[in-house]
Length: 363
Image 1 (cartoon, rainbow, N blue to C red):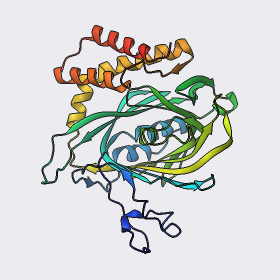
Image 2: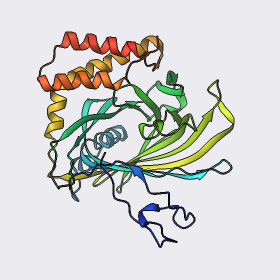
Image 3: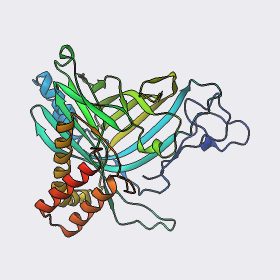
Image 4: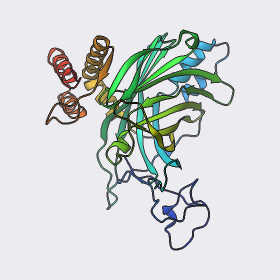
């Protein structure tokens, strides 16, 4: 991820660097230790596109029924964007709680439509990044498969996260299914992350979807630096605008006991998160197109392998074999070789996907 510039709000006290402050905290916290953490590289300049994007225009068509307008709102998230990520702890619930540094980063990303069916839509995020070194030289593009979001209309069940890398298929109450869309979010390696459900609301200014509160594992920005809580308990909102879309998160950092239940003093803190997807022009996403064209079938086989295990186990347990790297490592390595060769042996690729996913499935 590229480093995002941080802006100062208001005046400073003492000798603090203005970048050590952050909105929501600068009036009451004089600490000089709040400079945001995040990306350390520098991204190339991008041009924002202020014109209403195609997805927004299709969403505004007259005479659409509610379901079709919902579908168009989901499909409007596809396209090329500058994406910025901001996360900030805003409340602490423990005595002498020390708030973590805010998190900021940004990148360039294309969202591809993997499936567009009447009751199901799948969107794959792929980062296409170029970096600028200390001498102003621009790098070759770097392509990295990012997260995925699947949307199911009036779903009967969803894959719910519990704790300790365990997910279970759970029913959605029949009384709450009508008109709802379940969103399931997947990691970069296509393993599950979290799921929830909610309904879309539309007006002439924006379209928005608000989820129910569910658990989700620690995100990558947290699990390598935090060990003081066990899961996030939160909800998120997707809002489609004329120039892109925004994902807002409201997360409580929850401490669990050995049985996976909330501890006696369960909550450590609360964070707010905002991911802004802003349409851009003149950026070359072709390396992402090429990657999807060459490695896309392998990732389809990976998804099928996960679907089979989840159906068999009525859930999923992610368990890394002893001395093995994280799951994304062998899958990314194989996909990179496929992309480089620009050829895919479907029989070998499918076998590798199935063997690898089952090897990390905890059974």
